Image (cartoon, rainbow, N blue to C red; front, side):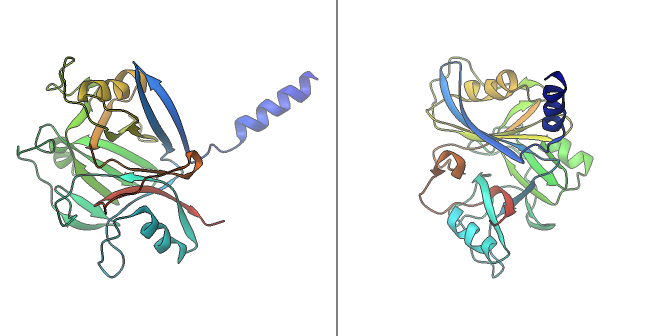
Length: 245
């Protein structure tokens, strides 16, 4: 019996972890849905336009494009702010091609509430990096999207976040571990403040850097949870790609 239990434990320990794990959780009185991605093994990409330069804009359109390659989405969410024409507000890099340059100066709205940051994806690694640090380090990425504000910067909440804020929205964002192997994408299930949202990443999830994606437009594709949020067309989308089955 002991040998059987020990053998089962070794077998389970040796089994590869799922590329992602989507689940609901409660934290400090608020509800969230998160998808935790193993960036060391997952095929994590950004999507904006198809091969003809036409805006994708919907989870279904991305899935249809991938189906032609024998692939599919297993998770996705909106991944950065965009203009009315859905073009990215800040830096955007897709499969090594720069679509929009880095914007490092202050500006209006949440994007300009510095410090803002960049999610940088490359094979085996996902990193959230503050924008000026990203530029200074000359980071190499395969995919990247700039958004703002940063939620957590090197273990500290954004300095402009107020515990008693009354500004509440459904919000989504991403946090990454120091070694770049853990990327956690989160959308709130009720309206939350920036302080509450940032605290989830910092204290609840223990992630040293996290980036805000957006508010009212926030959408999630997580078929394992029955989520396929519909609505108007989006700009940048981040997602995990797997083989079609």
